[in-house]
Length: 351
Image (tube, rainbow, N blue to C red):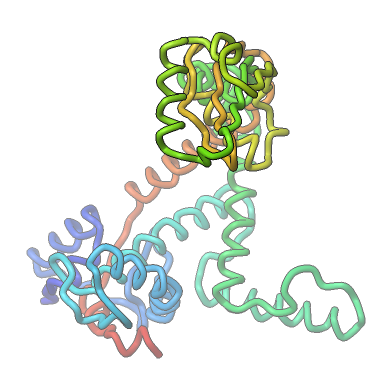
């Protein structure tokens, strides 16, 4: 009878762990093809496939372990982390990624996208693609992107293409699992109106620039005294009339997407945090101090909805897609070979 080790338990998600534990208790040992470490809805996960994901995720997990557990230098995968080791954490993440990616590929195949699901087929596609690019280069043709994919690059490239095509197919028409209609968009807009409306807000404001008198420099005392006078006056227009060399101007800022430079972004943040009639904290500059007063704001909700409807729709599709894939994983037939997992060690990951 195959027994689950602590490392295998740490590597499995709750649903998978319960399933394997049940098999262990009843004494059932599953016969598996050579090199198989798991299966998902009948599709094999090979040892080479798991090692590919372990090595691909290794830099990410190393960085997370350093940040979360204050580990220094190269990670020793036998280092205790939580209830297991660093290798257990890496294995858990790799298995989670494999489950999600396999579920996505299986869904794409079921929706008629004609994708390859097995790791060996992925490697064959990689070889074919690199050969095609090499042949095109030899003929003097333009090759867009890299001239040859690494396995990691091609995996991300291929999965992104398949995921995009699958989302489009699942959200194409009413009745599709990811379909988002105008009512859904409007409901999401109303639920977070302030965030979606930010770039459709027009701010009317006054700006007071007060030059620091020569001799005072940018002294803290002068700034403090000026700040008290501004607070006592309550309005920048009243301050302007009393401060020698002060300049008061009024303007509007539409908060639109045109405000891409750093100054506009800072101005939008500053005005967005003021209530009408409120004066900002002093903004210190070279030889001058600046205050802003928000005179009023208006929001063009129709413009905001028109601007953001596509973005909201995509956000809803993404949210529903994640739920759709998670549901598929939860209802999949997933089996993991604990002994095959235990046979993988730190040396295998680093080769």
